[in-house]
Length: 74
Image 1 (cartoon, one colour):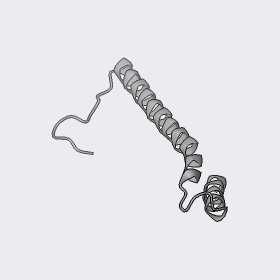
Image 2 (cartoon, helix red, strand yellow; image 1 turned 120 degrees about the horizontal axis):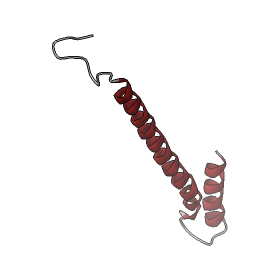
Image 3 (cartoon, helix red, strand yellow; image 1 turned 180 degrees about the vertical axis):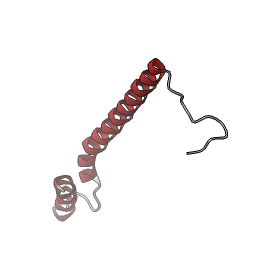
């Protein structure tokens, strides 16, 4: 919400002051938000991959089947 207010306020201030007829400069406030969100998505993906790898390793150690045998459905 704070980013939206800063973005909208900057654009309106530049237009109302007469500096610009149309302004998109305020949208630059969104760049850190998008970069942070991309890094969080990457960390989530990495965490998911690590958990899956650990589960698979544990199954390999216990000699559990990776999938149900053919012809048998749960």
